[in-house]
Every structure is written in structure tokens, then in C-alpha cells.
Image (cartoon, rainbow, N blue to C red; front, side):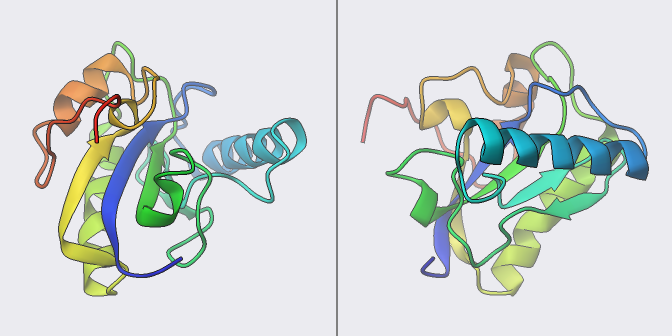
Length: 153
């Protein structure tokens, strides 16, 4: 991956639902990794980072490895952050939101994400409902979010 990347893309896992403690979150991350590798045939978990409901951040592919999280046009140009849970009709816990948001300036500080990055919800770059309706409404209020319809650009 060529750093720094210009985009950060926010996801929700949809399944499993939100995890609230370290051991449950670790189990869910391993389950997502197994699904991505065994069912989808990917080399590893698709996301660069995952955030548990308790605020723990898990490294997927990390800052330096291209993810498999937003489609071929976006993977090499973005960091994908997945919030564990289904946030179609609810928000992630406050601890998760704070941890996920804090990860982005860390990427800027490490020069892995450009200072003037653009933030998108997954639905803005692919035909999906991810990161869930309620969560997406919140993401549109975060710094650096820009409107975009996935059929454009």
C-alpha cells in the first residue's frame, strides 16, 4: 500500500452483533477472519482495523497492507475501519465510537493517512447498506466526511 492514503472508509460487521468485552470481541474478530479467509478465499481479514463495543481496537491488515474492504477501486487508496456489530437501527457504544474516531488522527500522525483525508461510509463506495442506517447518519457528522453516491466518480 502506498502511504499516506487519501480515504478512510467506515464499516459495520453486521454479523456478529456488538461485543462488549475483550474475550467476546477477540472471538468475533477471529470469526470474521475465518469467514473472510475460508468462505471468501481472501489472504486475511479484509479490514485494516476493527473496533469492539468496549472500545478495544484490533489490528486486521494494519496500516501498511492493502485491505479487502471497499472494492478494487478503493482498497489500495483507503484504510477500512470496521465497528463490530449491526448498526442498522442503533449506534455503536460510545466507547467504540471514541476509539474508532481516535484511530484516524493516529493514522494521520503516523503519516499513513493524509491530513486532508476524506471519510466515507462503505455505502458511498459500494452498493451496500453498510455501515447501517443509524450509524451512517452519525458518520456524516464526523470531521472530513463528504457526500458521495457510490455510482459517481
